[in-house]
Image (cartoon, rainbow, N blue to C red):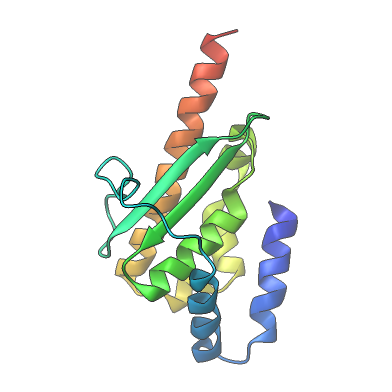
Length: 143
């Protein structure tokens, strides 16, 4: 996760100003695979986001978690793409050991997003962390 964060930070550093960075975030969102209508369910909806946000969590065969998401807002789709890039394919332990606030400070997102978008971003991360904790709990109870 640390390397992925470093790569993202380097990409952001190539951008001159926040207008350029916002365009880049929106472009990242365009690369997300769309969710099916069935996946746009209440179960997958992320609470605490002003926009409509859906997050699908799947267990990988190796115990990692794979995340996919979508939103009805372009900038939020980009934020989902960043979150998916950082967290998808990671073990529950890696997810729980990662400091999201420090990561988004490093990317400069903390100061660039509105309070409402920051709250939504951290609602997505909290959902990912809850899913990781659920997998951790299920794994330790089956041992």
